[in-house]
Length: 126
Image (cartoon, rainbow, N blue to C red; front, side, top):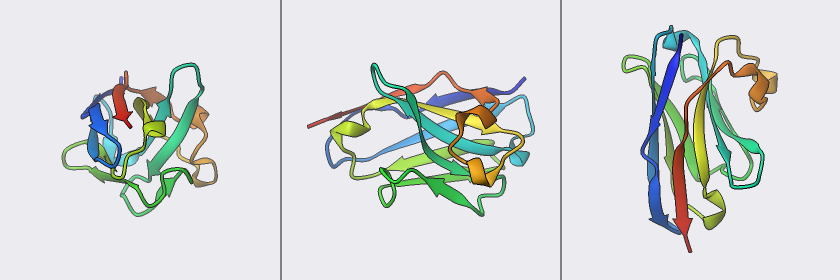
């Protein structure tokens, strides 16, 4: 059973930065693609970023390109999301997810992510 635990969320002013972490246990982390999704109140869960098993390929939603960076450390079983130039519209609960069988042509499809964390709240004030 794969367990994912996010951390690093909080309250930040617009223009600020946060770094989210997601620690994995109970599986073979180094073989999974990893993704970050977010869900604002009253809205659906949306794709933010993804990274393949060795970090060689990354994928981003248009809304975060140039501001967010996804990375991973397989030795630490951890994936990160560095968020810069934050905007109020980035306010959401951020979830990390693991995809054991990753299709790069569907990197944003939540259905291929089999394991999910509980989420961490990010609030950006204006």
